[in-house]
Structure formats: C-alpha cells, structure tokens
Amino acid sequence: MKRALALLLLFSFQNSFAGNSILALVDKEIITYNSIEKKLSAVNSYEEKLAIINFRINTILQLKKTQEFNLYPLKSDVNNAIIELANINNISLETLSSFSEFDLIVQEITEKLSILNLQRFVTKDLKLNLSKNELINKCPIDNNDIEIKQIKIAQIIISQIDNSKISSENLDKSIKEFLQKISTHISKGASFESFAKLHSQHPSYANGGVSEWITVNNPTTKMLDLLKDGEVSDIYTTNMGFAIAIKINERVVNDNLKKCKSKLIYLDAEKFYANWIEELRSKAYIKIYYDKL
Image (cartoon, rainbow, N blue to C red):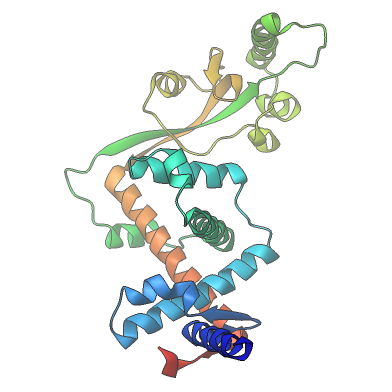
C-alpha cells in the first residue's frame, strides 16, 4: 500500500513538473509555463506565444537594471496605483485586496512602475536636435492653430524662517515681511540672482531662481506677465511657500506645434529605448525552448 501511494505521489509530481516546464532561460533566471500561463492561454498562434516569451525576457532584463540602478518605485506610488486600479474597476480597496491574486497584482504594478522609472532614467538626457525649420516641416502649422503665451521668471520662494522664537501662527507674517525686505533691496538695485541663491528654498535657487517656460493661463501667471523689466512682483502664494519674482523673458508658441514636438520627442525616446533593450539582449544569455510553445 505504501509503495502504491509513493508511486501515485511520484506520478502526480511528475505530471505537475511536466506541466510547469521551462520555456526560456535569461542569464540565471528561468521562465516557466506556469508563470505566464494565463497570457499564453489567451492566444492561439505560435507567433503570439513567442511574442509573450520575448516580452517576458525583456521585462526580466529591465528589472535587473532597475535593481542595478536602484530604481524601485516608492511604496506610496505603488499604493496610489493600487487605489487607482480599484477606482477604475469600481470596487473598494478592501475587495481588491481580498482577491486570491492580489499579491500578483501588486507584483505586476511594482514591475511596471520600476520599468517606467528605468525608461525615464535611460532617456532623461535625450534632446530633439531639430532646427525650427525642420520642426515646422515635420509639424505643419495650420492657420487655425492656437498660439500660447509663455514667460520665464526668476523666483525667490520661502516656506520657513530660521527663528525658533517665531510661533506657527506668526510664520506666514514673518515670511512675508522678510520677502518684502528682499523686494525693497532688489528694487534699489540689488541682484535678484544673488538673493535667490542665498535665500530661496526652491531647487531653482542654484541658478538664481530662474524657471522653465511657464504658460500664462491663471491669475498668478497673468500678474507676472504684466511685470515691467526689472520690476519685482507682489508677494504671491505657491505650492511650496510664499514668493516674489521678476520677469525674465516671454514668447508665443503654437499649441499644435508644441504638442507635435512633444510627440516627436516621445517617439525618439521610444526608439532609443527599444534599441537600448536590444543591446541588453545582445549581452545576455538567452535560450528559448521553441519546441515547448
């Protein structure tokens, strides 16, 4: 009886192992049938199954790079994605987390966010090297295109005052008084850039508080757009604290041209990243067991 039971267990194990056969090797990692069974069962053709295998190979290679560059997503980003997934499907977070496959869902979200971080990291220094004429040729201008006003400013943003005697109730008042003193000095000829580098608590302090191009589309930006050359703005509120600014430059851009340029940048980055993945594949040991597909 014991021998019969042992044979039965062995037969069961062998069947289970056979069903979870190895479909591919990627360096020291394996891709098993069970790990992508649902995706494979949703397609019929050999080409579609091969595409799923190759997609998983690319995923493994990318995840190895996210580990190498320490590009794992923040826990808060993963949680926000889970909440968004629950909202999209009109279910509660509690219901979603009760699913038997919830851990797999979290894993897939984490992998996707990791790869998104990697894509940004790899393409962050790419620039679209097109002249204005080349850009216009690729993105023809229509007479009905909307033109958008943009400005570049320099800001001094302050959110805290280094004084332990100031109560939280008087903090806003103290910040505004300090900014007003700075504004007075600048109006009398002091360097805005020097004050920004010395006092601004925004990351732009390093280059004198100079911003990227800002679209004029709200009361604050409209107020800043009206500033005369060298004129210091009134104190205004930002999401990082109170601020004063001067207007540095202005331009008018074509909205469709801007969108077209963004699309060209995206396509260029997409092509660059695809080539980068191909380079990863060329350096990796990859073996696909085609006869098992």
